Image (cartoon, rainbow, N blue to C red; front, side, top):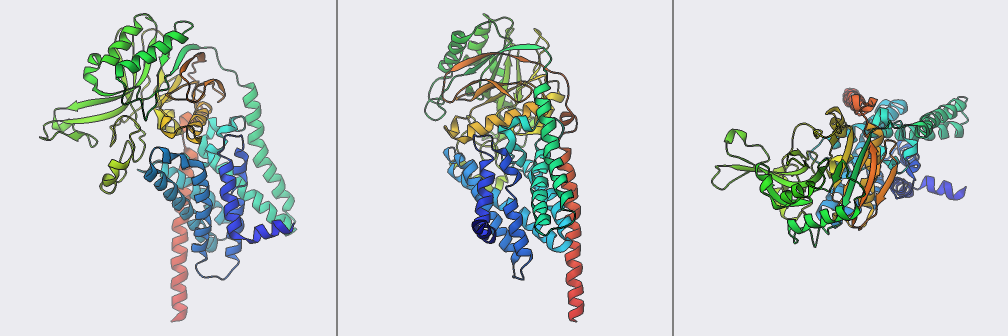
Amino acid sequence: MQIIKKIIQNKITLSILSGLMLSLAWTDFPLGSFALISFIPILIILEHLLSTDKKNESLLFFSYTFLSFLIWNTITIWWIAYATIPGAIAAIVLSSIFMAFVMFLSFLSFKTLGRRIGYLVFVCNWIAFEYILMHSQLSWPWLILGNAFSNSIVLVQWYEFVGVFGGTAWILTVNVLIYETYRQILARQKNRNSYVIGLMVLILVPITYSVIRFYTYQEKSNPVSVLILQPNIDPYNEKFTTSAFTQMQTLTNTAKTNIQSNPDFFIAPETAIATGFYENKAKQNIAILHLIEFLKEYPNSQFIIGATTRIRYENPSDFTKTASLSKDKSYANDIFNSALQISPDSTIQFYHKSKLVPGVETMPFPIITKIFTDVLVDLGGINGTHGTQDYRTAFENNKNAIRPGVPVCYESVYGEFNNEFVKAGANVLFIITNDGWWKNTAGHKQHMRYAKLRAVETRRSIARSANTGISCIINQKGQVVQKLGWWERGAINGIINANTHQTFYVKYGDFVARMGLVVAIIILVITILSRIKSRLEKNARAN
């Protein structure tokens, strides 16, 4: 007990403890439940500082929480440094500052509006922060709290209603109620039993539903045969030094070696063709021609593959914000990180990746970040700002009714964004990615686990092709049923089921986040007005 008392009284120890517990929720083990208690040390610090008369206690609270989040961010996303050291430092420090600022605002609300409203502000501010950051130029949804359960998928089947932002709301509310229940018991309050009951309901109801849903969910039989390719081409030492034709031979030889029956779809990874060919001249590209020739042996199959592509604009009225002008300004080029579907009749469909990696595929605040372009690594074949498209598409073919949506790499981390593929008619999802930049670290494992959440949210089967791993098949419950490990060359033969049903979350998206944002704005305005009123009254009394 003495040790526990000392920990509770030491704010730095509490800060470290919070950061470590948050980090545990993102490990390779099913420890997402640590997120349910990870903010309690921060709430204890808040309580201590509110009960003191120290000056600048809000800044002290910012400092303590910054330490917590710096630990969490460093332990969880340090692997970005393999791709870009400046990017890793920026991501870790900025993310920690933003999170601590959210807590700073919450502290001010506790002081101004009291405990009950303060708790509401704490939950809503955090949700609003995650939502705003996700839609900002520095878009970074990697550490949305709801992602903590990506390794405990059996507990969050209810994400089909609320998505990961619902998970964030649940995690924060459980933290608050556990802490408040502890306070009530410690103070021997008469209503402490009500808090205990409320806490049990809040935890057990969603988990009970989830477990039942997990073990009773049945996929409707609508089989799609896939051959998922994992060429395992080293992105640092091989990808941009080996010819495109040689890489296509590696890809098709891997397919021929592993094929068991003619699949509906061959699926190859992101930027498997990195030559940057013009889309209107795709059939002149040697890699594309090789794949069209390959498909003559498989007349009922489609080939899904990632490529770096270009579009040239001759008419100035067609120039886009992302296009690069020629020296004489007579034309402009857009570069895209694209997904292609190649059919046996040589028809080619294109989808352009539209959630781009900040600092690599798109320059946030371009006037400021332009000077850093040269030090950032190329993660998609070509550095700089890529083009996008304003809508999602699902590929079609004349052989069957299967319409795959193909999120490219970073896009698979965005819940509501993937809903757009489903609304466009996608009855399966094929994720293509190249995670080799991060080497064998937690990065590629976290990325794969987030795909499991997309399967639950949309109830879509997922076939995932990753250049260096982890390629896998994920069923509609979020279970990985087949996979190919890190740094292996090979293929996965599998059957997945198409699904046309739209979940509640697909229909209504991140409504939890939008509600949190509205409440946070309203209370922020009230807080500011209350503090202004208080200062005016104080000045009036002084005069």
